[in-house]
Image 1: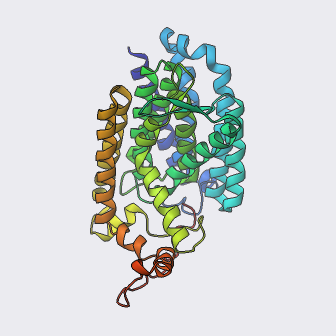
Image 2: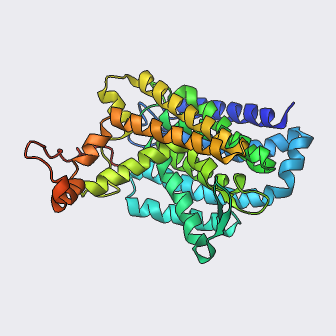
Image 3: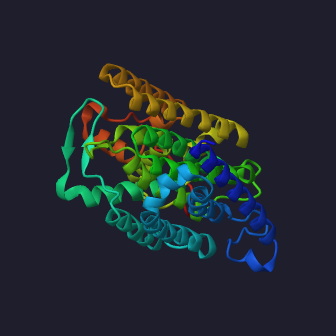
Length: 380
């Protein structure tokens, strides 16, 4: 059996069994408390199930398959170190699911895990671009690497606002990055990404709307952290240059939603870590889509980003790569316009202030200032 298929099946089975077992136990006093205040109805089991699948599957696959053992065994000690960093992020999220941590507490855990990943050798030291060439970022390497990992750790958490969204988007991104890593001669990284995708697939049936279990911060932060860290090694070529375009496009949807969140909060002078009800999935809901409709649209969008990332990786012809990137820009622009972001950002506090400073952009008296974002998700 193909080693990646075996890994996928094992990870699905472990996550599926762990979620079913934990869901049954969450109805008892034994596990009701640790999984948060919603445990009696929708326990936050995703993080536990996915962490177990991701941690156990590579060892189990190595015990079953000699091919998996050849790929994984030489790097098993390195994986244990990486798993330690994952554990820190997982426990940070689990604490938030249980007690509700402040953003400062969560950031400390994420920074600690990102530093551990950098120390383990997952580093962005040279950046390669679709048009060719690479730049050495020198002393900025630690800062860029840590910022990269933390960004994606939180990006997946930000899109975790509707049932099935964060898990499904992460599965698609992990599968895409696994294909890229395998073709880039990083088979062990590909195997780990397949294990992550399998863990997500095993949990997903419980998370589709109406969800009986939810991902929680422990699951969303963990999946974002693993994707961010492994994308570094998986997208690094033989020259040790990090091909930034592929993971950026593969994770295009969470990046888009995160950049929008940061931009609108900055322009409306609200706290960047204060949750709101203005994410892309909220705007789709305003348009009248139900939970499954929202999921279908966001999965389709993620598939488009994944396909574009694969094209960028395999097509070594800059005009074609430029066409792919241009099509994505047009698509994103159309989506933002359809969802009303172009208008709301144009009429935000910050942009209106700039327009008043520039006479030729001064707003007319008929333009109405947008209402401040409503208080919503306290942890996104």
